[in-house]
Image (cartoon, rainbow, N blue to C red):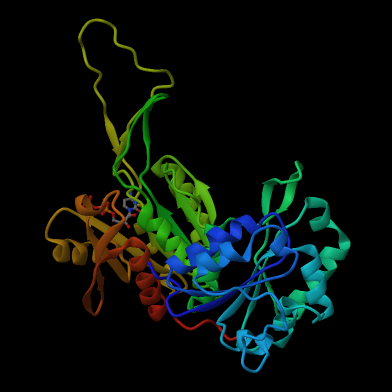
Length: 409
Ligand code: CTP
């Protein structure tokens, strides 16, 4: 999607088995439109060759501070000045220690030290054995480099190359990419708590059957991700969908509309934005059988009665917190026809400042969509694009409409 178009990344590799992941990371960065300059320590070259990294990045790899290819013989200055970010992946325990000490006896730590700190961020993707990760010396060094302005992207948990299990694995390339994209995203929702509902609900008939709908949850998950990238603290209340939870988003899994309401109501009171994308079932079976309903051989079909589910959005939008202007509510409308008329009427009926309309059958399960934004001033179309792009645009639209944050005293 070219999420990193125009960005020039210095990808630094220090020594560690996770160097094999750096090859894939390099490809993913390029696929997103970045240019990548690889710099490797001597130890990194024990794990992966510069040949591989040159072939993948399309640029000669740098490894020595004495590299005569640079006319001024100052690769540490030239490489660090042209970067939009320096990403060290993998970042070994030894390399963290070097950074903490401000060492400059090989090219990679030298260019980290020489970079203009106010303009070129330094992001670290640590990778090491769990004991090395937990060691007080490593934690002390990490605290020091963070204090000095570096960003530590965290580590994964799981099986390690040494055969042990624990914290210290390097994050996966896709996770690092997500972190990098988030890092570059303007923080238009900094200081805001955002609550999102997503997916369908499942209304049980008996323990093995139920009523649900085709909502995939993709739009809501994309919005949750975009909101966190924009700096918000995000809670996602999701019906039964098998989508991965966006990083740093707190997910609460629910099944039915009543469970969704129970999860949403108290949290909405703490939020500053509520975005209801869930396709909540309008009705649920009046009684859910505790046991599987069996055929009795008579050919008679069961008769199902229904009761209406509570309207979660309308309830939240009519709460005191929303009415006094402390909670900005956004509704969605999935319609099959007459989108503008239905969305306009629905906005008023639900009592929300912003209603986002889309043609339901055309979008369920798809990766792209087109949205119609309706507010008190009129309507505006967000033309067909991926749900990811639309989510980013919608987050920007919402941020524009929020009251300013109270000034801290
Ligand atoms: N919604 C909700 N709780 C419900 C029903 C809907 O919170 N019980 C929210 C949805 O998440 C969405 C908006 O209300 O943001 C509109 O949902 P939609 O299903 O399009 O509208 P309905 O209220 O069901 O109206 P209708 O059936 O007339 O289209």
